[in-house]
Length: 267
Image (cartoon, rainbow, N blue to C red):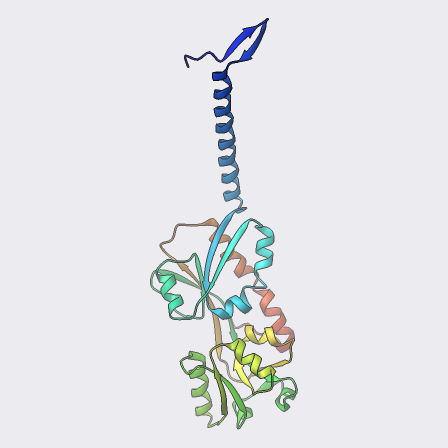
């Protein structure tokens, strides 16, 4: 069939010819290649390999994802994650443009071309220096902030705007001593004794063990974590697995807060 002489007989024994040896090498390479294909298919089926690109607000890369990633990576050790922090509204634009597999935002509405799942809603909390007189209270009211040095987020931040409106409605005047762009920066300044503030509970928890006292606020200021999935990226079982992992491991975030403040979840 091949028209080749693969073996020759010498002294009663078969020996491969040069053509036979070369053909054997080709068959061997093909066999190894097929084996690699089968192995790769098994890895994909069992999620042993793959990469996920996750775009999120900086707060989620610092405070939400870190405790949730180790158990996922332990289960899928050959999976790699690319975490891309970005602020709104550019984050939502990236997700609408289908640039990432998943997104984590605070938005209550799905950006164009995506679907949204609400993962968690907690209330914003008060943060104080550990030796501040207000730390003696378990719940702080707007009136407690009268005349206090207040560390605030940027004036463009939606939570800053909401809190400014709330304090104005209660006729409470704070001393706005510092304005910054991240909750982590706010908490660092609170820890240093520059003032008090109200921030998201995830960042507050990060600083609770290092000199920042966390207390409830008497008025609900919801902080929502939304999972965003682009509609037009290729279907991925790995994306499904990671989404399910986030939903089933949220207790890792909530439990430490409940130790400090009592029941926290709103949804």
